[in-house]
Image (tube, rainbow, N blue to C red):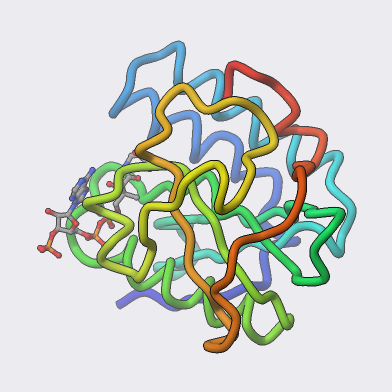
Length: 180
Ligand SMILES: CC(C)(COP(=O)(O)OP(=O)(O)OC[C@H]1O[C@@H](n2cnc3c(N)ncnc32)[C@H](O)[C@@H]1OP(=O)(O)O)[C@@H](O)C(=O)NCCC(=O)NCCS
């Protein structure tokens, strides 16, 4: 039985290693190192108000984690967050933790008055939690996308699902073309 929480500050030293191990197992050592370094950078350099994380805890073990960081659309008043990366510990995958953690994270964003969530990943998986494919004219990504079919979004405020205006800016850890 896992417990979901958005209280991640006490566990930050463990999170880069969790992401490194999970992505090394699924995508290879190099990707594991790259995502571990991204998470380290996100946790170290992102302003408090621009970062959220949700954890699935099994006793004292972190079984899964998602980071959410702000995406600024200068010409749009709505608050937008990027959901990335997402990891469930390898031996706990396909037991529903990922989807529970995503739903919990989206509720947490709503509680923080975030209007719109985007992510960049597998449409078949993220479609299960409400993400729909969007185009780069509907919401400009902060960098050119190598896999445009993985650009996904959903309105969180139940009202405004109109296109997001203007160019966007990610937090500095994501400011690297090879991540996109
Ligand atoms: C992708 C990941 C987060 C999913 O979490 P999870 O806890 O294993 O997934 P869940 O148990 O919530 O969901 C399993 C369901 O999604 C499906 N699923 C899992 N990964 C999928 C994928 N890549 N594409 C399509 N469907 C997928 C399963 O078949 C299952 O379907 P069902 O609900 O109809 O039975 C997890 O497997 C993981 O950490 N993978 C390695 C890192 C990664 O790829 N992260 C995502 C990119 S940021």
